[in-house]
Image 1 (tube, rainbow over the protein chains, first blue to last red):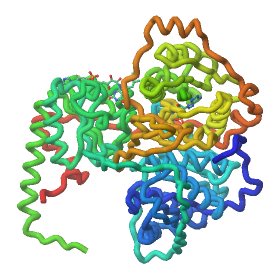
Image 2 (cartoon, each protein chain N blue to C red; image 1 turned 180 degrees about the vertical axis):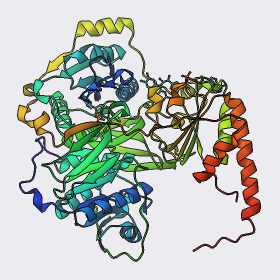
Image 3 (cartoon, rainbow over the protein chains, first blue to last red; image 1 turned 90 degrees about the horizontal axis):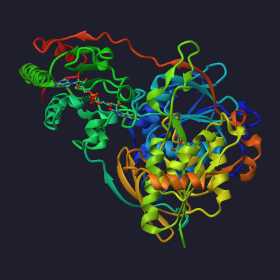
Image 4 (cartoon, rainbow over the protein chains, first blue to last red; image 1 turned 90 degrees about the vertical axis):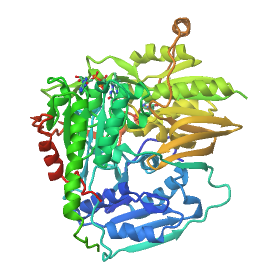
Length: 356
Length: 264
Ligand SMILES: Cc1cc2nc3c(=O)[nH]c(=O)nc-3n(C[C@H](O)[C@H](O)[C@H](O)COP(=O)(O)OP(=O)(O)OC[C@H]3O[C@@H](n4cnc5c(N)ncnc54)[C@H](O)[C@@H]3O)c2cc1C
Ligand SMILES: Nc1ncnc2c1ncn2[C@@H]1O[C@H](COP(=O)(O)O)[C@@H](O)[C@H]1O
């Protein structure tokens, strides 16, 4: 609960020193987004010669807390209760707030997942500080300890650099996939501070009635996205894309009209009103490249455009362009990939892979 | 007892019409027309569905300059009972802390509220902080990233989506629900209702009305500041032409980038 008062900064910000990272878990395992944020936090703690404090909340987390250490935390504060088997907004906010008030971190970073953003937004209000969402870059000024948070701005065509100079902790979230997962080192030294949280009966008002794991792929974290637009002309085009996606270990994405037509669920729609993807490879087949689509995929590592129109906007934003009917190109592409895989099989099969 | 429902909505520039001023690198929004923030349209639609099933009164609340009035009338035209515009020069430049604070103060001023509906995020700032922030200031329970809700005798049963899956969570009222973009199909206002809405007008409140001092909000009372804007770091893409006949060249690139895993 927060009082209806303005945000008041602490008198002496120099007392707020370390970097804190919320180590998100799901079913008591660190999420990939958490590992990425630990890596980023490590860099900032090293730069400012301070400690990286991880906060883990869950129902069975003594091993998870160690994982947070292996990925880079110097100290892990772990809050454990059988009630924390799933994310619950208020009690998680209570615990993260308690950790902030106790450890007084200069910086607090939180994975920008749905639950992470829920938690970060509430915690920022509780501790009366500033939070920057969805940062593409998070860094710290070595001498001042000021957090530099850069996020895509309106329509993703500019970036804003946002600072929170007076309030502490300086907070930021980043979308999953923004930073690399750091190496895991089980020789690292760190301290775990495991706390059993006593939850009184009736204290937690949120009750999870059911949970259904995501069916189908999460395109936001896919390494390869094979996307189709109106140029497919018919729903069968999606089958073809799926075949290519399978060959590349990727997933199918679509432009908005395809989702509007109901050929595939919204969870595959890329763009401003869909999902932001940042894969290693984005193949756009029959997609014109309107800005609302582009903002959702412009940061892909490699972009291939397949379009019958040589002047399509997508072509200007692609690394490779094939001006041809996608119904010619994609089958040829699938065939060539299969050919290579077949060849590799012959080569690779006899060698025995050494696994550590 | 009739449910007291509030939908908070921001009127935002239409994304397709905003561009960067090449000289001073600021966003030129002057040419942009405005729209109801997309996720808030879904929030309103969800509130309308809740009202249809369980009864109640819907107040649409927006903290935007007066240009928002026609958009709020549109909301009433779609079926909201009334619209309140919280408009005060002092809020200019507010980040999400004072924005949440001012909106929460206005909701408190409405009186006892059962469910507040917000969008998951705005399309212009897209932080998704205001809904959770309002929940904090109201000391309400929160269900974020929600696609549908039911109401059952003092409880909200909400379907939430997150990276690992979908859950159904039950929270007591007062509750804040943040609604996913595209989670439903927002209805349009009928001409008849729209005319009625314009006749009815929009209630305008200032900070004094909701009991907040001007020095609680605005740019100077925002923890975060925008230091500067920089162009988006785009990679120069070379757009190398490839034909279907020499598709092997593209597959070479895939191999070089380790995009093709050896069959296994
Ligand atoms: C507020 C708002 C939000 C929006 N949000 C999104 C969003 O999130 N995501 C999104 O995608 N869109 C979004 N849109 C819609 C967007 O503006 C475009 O309308 C949409 O992206 C166009 O889809 P498309 O490229 O598939 O279709 P088109 O623009 O019709 O392009 C089809 C392309 O296929 C090519 N083509 C035709 N036949 C073939 C063939 N046989 N082989 C190869 N190429 C072929 C054509 O040359 C053309 O370039 C939004 C719009 C608005 C106003
Ligand atoms: N100025 C505002 N007035 C009313 N509601 C707002 C305002 N700003 C944000 N909201 C609500 O909070 C949600 C999240 O906004 P944001 O945190 O800006 O992404 C929006 O979808 C709206 O429902």
